[in-house]
Image (cartoon, protein in one colour):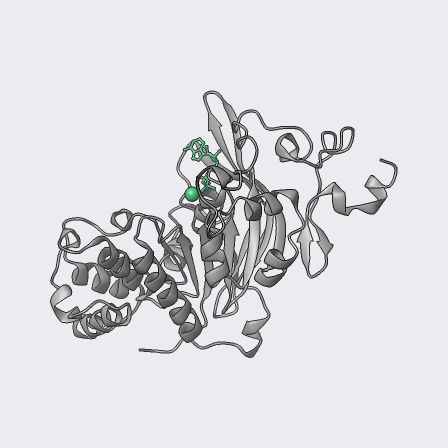
Length: 346
Ligand SMILES: Nc1ncnc2c1ncn2[C@@H]1O[C@H](COP(=O)(O)OP(=O)(O)O)[C@@H](O)[C@H]1O
Ligand SMILES: [Mg+2]
C-alpha cells in the first residue's frame, strides 16, 4: 500500500484544532445548544476519548467535524482547522456543504465509523464492491489494484477468507464481521483521522475487545489520530491516550488518561468514575449512578450546567458564572472549585 508522507513534526502538531465550536439545533420548541463552545486539539498517533453520558453532545461534535449534522442543526460559531498533509489548512466549519474540498477530505483524510455498521454499508451491494468504490473515489488506482487492496484490508481487520467475503453482501455477515467490514472500508483510504462513535457498544464483550485492539493496532501502524466516542470508562481505560469529558455541549475536563483516573478534578468526572460498578459489588450494594439526570436540553441551567447535580454547588458562584477551562496539573478543568480567587471568600 502507498505510504502517506509524514512531516517530521507530525507528532506534536495537531491534525485538527477545534476552537470555540458551537453547533445548535433550531427546533420548533426552542434552541438546543448541542455543542456550546468546544476547544479541542486532535493529535496524530494518539487516541482521544470523548467521554460523557448520553445526550452530552459527543456525536454532534464529531458529526460537526465532518459536516454531517442534519437540519435543523448547524454550526453557528467557531472553527475546525484541518491541517492537510500537503501543508494546506482548511476550516471545516466554514467549508461549503457539498463542496469538492469537503468531499475529498471526508472519507479520505477523515473517516468515521458508527455504532450501527449498516449506517455506512449499503445493504444491496457486495462488501468488496463498496470498498473498491471507496478506494477508487479517492485514489487513482485500477480496478484490479483496488480489489487487491480491499481483500488485503479485509484480512487486516481479521475477516477470515477475505477473498470469499469480498463477494458477500452485508446481511450475510455476523454483527462483528459487519463492524469489521465497515472499519475496513473506513481504513481503506488510510485516513489521517478516524472518528469512531461508540463503535463497539452493540457488540458482545469478546468482539468488542478484538475491535478495540484492531483500532489501536492500525492507529500505530498508520500513525493515525483516533477520536473515540464512548460512555464506557472500561473502554477509556483500555484505549485512550487522552480524554475529554463532555457535559451539556461543553468540555469540562481534559487530561491524559493516567491523570484522569488518578486525579479526576471535575465533580462530573469524579461522579462518572464513582458510578462504575466494582467487581464483587452487585445488586443493592452497587454504587449509585450520578445523582439526577442530564437536564432537558431546552432547560439549560445558568452558570455551570452541572451545578444542579453537583455535591459541591456554591450558590452565588456556580449559578451566576460559567466556569472556563483552565490549566490544572497536566490537564484542564472548568470548575470554580479549582479557582482559588473565586472560592477564597466562600
Ligand atoms: N436532530 C436533532 N434535533 C434536535 N436536537 C438534537 C438533534 N440531534 C441531537 N440533538 C440534541 O443534541 C444534544 C446532543 O446530542 P448527541 O450529540 O447525540 O449526544 P451524545 O452523542 O453525547 O449522546 C442532545 O441534547 C440531543 O437531544
Ligand atoms: Mg452519541
